[in-house]
Amino acid sequence: MNIHVNAEAFSRFEARPVSPSIGAELIGVDLGEVDEELAAEVRAALLKYQVVFFRDQQITREQHIHFARMFGELEIHPATPKGQPDPEVLRITHGPGNKGKENMWHSDVTWRECPSLGSILRAIELPEIGGDTLFSNMVLAYKDLDDDLKERLRGMIAVHDIARVFAKRLNEDASRLHEKFPPQEHPVVRTHPETGEHLLYVNGAFTSHIKGLDRDESDQLLSDLYKRAAIPEYQCRFRWEPGSLAFWDNRACQHYAASDYYPNVRVMERVTIAGDRPYLDMAA
Image (cartoon, rainbow, N blue to C red; front, top):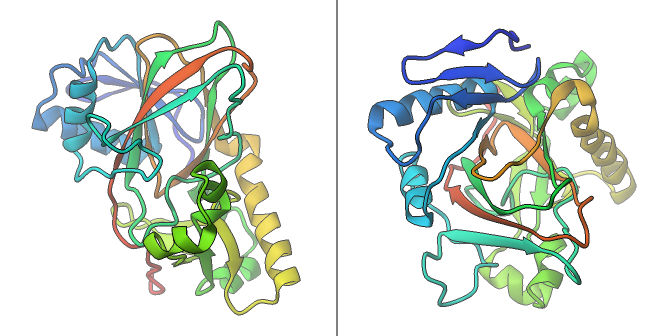
């Protein structure tokens, strides 16, 4: 599934790949003027490249929300302060005394029964240098496994738990958090609902264990699978600039926010699009 490095022209923009494996900048897009035709082409580019990037977008929070709504219903994250206007927006602020904690490979909200389709992140305030976000292609991470391991993984179920990350961040007891968001079971290998591709669907942030394996075996297997995201040949790296946005497919890739800018300030706003329940089509 390697992507050709030549720029590809859609009818409403040019897609310029940023690595052979994942990611493209969409050139010539104005996200302040989004119609259904443009949204459909962006979705096609997202399915092809797994993450798409936009530069020089001087849009408002309301326009950010409107753009995201073109792709589905929006989520409200439990970390969003109660009473916040526009609760669909998760504001992620780091600086002195608050070092970034998103520096591990993960896919957003896999602790939900129906995890996210995708996330759209907008730069609000950036450090002078650092704070890049990396993305990794989980289709390739699965495709390059040996056939015996692929066969072993098919049909395995993993448990995803919000408390692994957010019990401490929300200052809430894990058992109480589980009353609102009980741990969820998802296939270790899932089928992408739009492309039909198979991909690895476990991550170091939210996956706690694999059902039916003893803890040591589960931990070792998960550790090996988590490392797949860190293989450079599956990755691209995005350097943020004022006016930049990234739109990634949480069903197909993982991401890692480098926290190398501390104690400088980095402020981002994320709007997340609801998805559907992961499944594995064993016949595919």
